Length: 323
Image 1 (cartoon, rainbow, N blue to C red):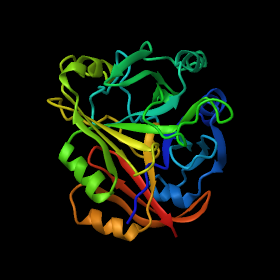
Image 2: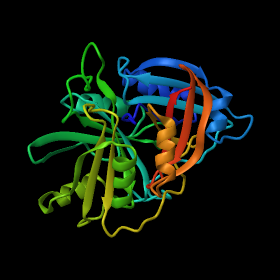
Image 3: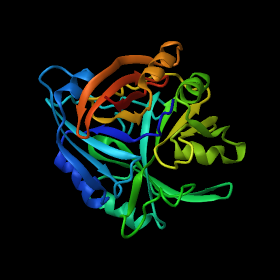
Image 4: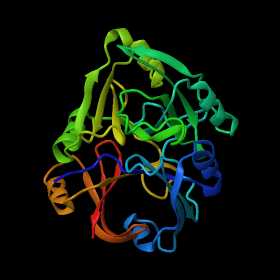
């Protein structure tokens, strides 16, 4: 059985056209499909009968991993998956669940980052240039449509076929990585490694010498011990999932759960070559919960079988295979 890296991330938006001005306009991602999602898919996502959804799927020059699916639901559910920025935010940066969506860009960061900010998406801090070991990078987090956190980062540790920077492929890459705040390292290892078969590229606590820098980068209180678990499909540098664990932090989940229909970062989509085998494997373990068993749905690319699964850190996954 083979499970792919993240093929697509779904982001719920209140205004599809406005969101496209950023991702297709400013960031120059390509719109590969747009239209209404089929009712069969919406029902499999457990949305109320009568819900409609306008959507657009974007990629970096057709790259098959790290795609972005923007969905505007009608009626709009104003629940936000993560709302942890600002004085009155109901969530904490340390709360369990999806954290941010990361795009690579070419060095230097500032011109492209400023282009995003000038388009109306505020930076949450000044750009941070840093060095960890031999890796030098720069990054900034901006509040995207409906405040979804977007991490813009000078690309590193990537394959030449993965990073799309500069003409003719556009200034920004596909989604290189998506981060999740992790509550249980062992449960996460069981799910991602033993159940899904993804490869841990990194599985280590931050060394003491970099702790202050990492605390600043991930918005953790000074002195917090941080462990990183980075999962990938062998041979693929994009569509990665980065789990961030804070030792000693309260295990509080986000006020808005990760699920289709909510605003923000709401769904991981992965392809599987044997959905029945994955279902059986998950059913025999306590690492995840099957929310929707394999169900036939109609997608823009045809009929597929889709299964919804909630992971150990409040993640929501859509695993699919040809029908």
